[in-house]
Image (cartoon, one colour):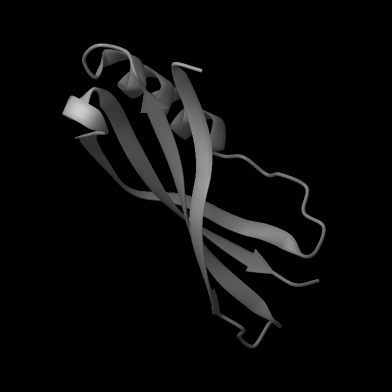
Length: 97
């Protein structure tokens, strides 16, 4: 499709503490588009951020303690730099129950 969202790389580090086992997940959500200019990808990136703000998804294991936006970067990519891409970086704290 000309515009899409992809869940990308993830790094996980142990963050167990006195309350029990847990981990911090840092992950990237990418918005990629062939649309002219950055308006389309910025609109979709804002919608992704809004959807994840305050989200409490059900997990197969543990519970989400917090989810925070860390940063975003926008760039052109592909042949003749016709593709627009915004990478949104998030941090999530998961506590095992």
